[in-house]
Length: 589
Image (cartoon, rainbow, N blue to C red; front, side, top):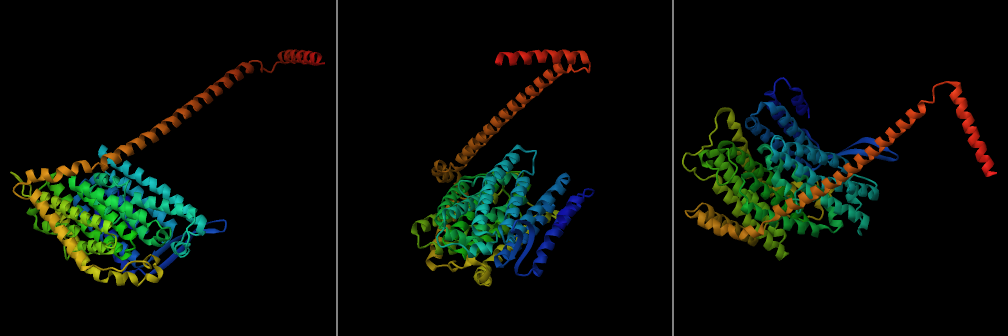
């Protein structure tokens, strides 16, 4: 926060903004060493007999999220210092990015609904500002409006849910609410839980609200990397995990499962046909968020948290790689980008991210996907769907990789950096190391999280973290098959003929984007017409009041002519009035 304030005040020297942002973010990461576990409550204000508190909680899961946010945020700030070259926008960019990071740090420490809602709203505001950062572009403005208006639906639902929880439990503290969930959920509380689900689905881009996230690619690439890896879109999943006993008690987990499956299938199909380099990764984020919520829906909280943590590393890595490629080629279409092989460090780092996202052993993505498959093995229909989603994931991410790493046709563009611009490549390399190291986390994350199980009720009903041998074999065969088919379609000697065969059947299946945008446009028009009608009524009322005021002024000006202070006119009017009064009395009598 001090760094953000310093950036705002550095109006004279814009070049210093990036260094202040890097130091501020890294300092926040170092401060985690001194943080202590527990809950801190600060009174905010009092109304009647109720005290509104700011409650901060630091347990194992909170600390893990804080580390992810600050570690990846620091690397993205380093990356931005070389990526964002426009001096006139330096101060605004770094101030907003630091505020974005601050909002997620506050969210990660939320111990009650008050602090959660404050951070939730700041995340919405900052995402709007950063998605529409290039405000001179119409596409960026449209994407920012789409994001903030879609998420606003969930914001209204969240505050309504908070009011219901407060009226029922008499408290907004997570610990109090989760300890007081009744065995039989009354209809009022059930309505509050459904409203909470609506907020989670909008924030984490789940069906039918998933399309705002791919459109958010109009923001700068570092913003996309931060947004998709460790900030706003993770807020919904985080809320679902820490409030799991409430969702479990209200028996809404089947709803989460169905929505997650629909979202995972739609996003996978969209990623398979998408041609914009960052949108492919965006649809993969939507799919991964759906898989995390599916894990929550079956009670696999350990698997959900592991997926939640490790996805941040390889997803930020792939977005930073995309930014490097786009910066060198000035292209966004997969058919036009190339030259990744020319930079060995970036190529190797990107390959690690691709293998992890696809789920190849022994990288972290394999452990996340295979552990999820093991937990849902009892439901064969869900198991088959998730397995096919894994196959599709391998297919589309290798399609993406084969396109960006192909050799340039004719005079190629090579991705080479030296001196200051190496700061673009090094963060990706460090994230690749983090992706590899995250595989080891699988062996100890259950034990780490269980240390705080007494104060973490969301772990009480969690399935153990594990991988079945047959599940691992089936999953590995499917992702290898996806990679091989992708190679045959997009990297073999006959890619054009095979690509027509491969993508043809998918075209009639993928209409979610058009349907969503059509519904969104209809709703926007509906709201516009309501606003237009209110504006018409306002203008009509204003016109009527103006006419009434003008009429009063005219009448008053006429009567003012007889109010001249002379006795004779007053006496004349008095006599006339007296005559009329006597005449009226005579007629009545």
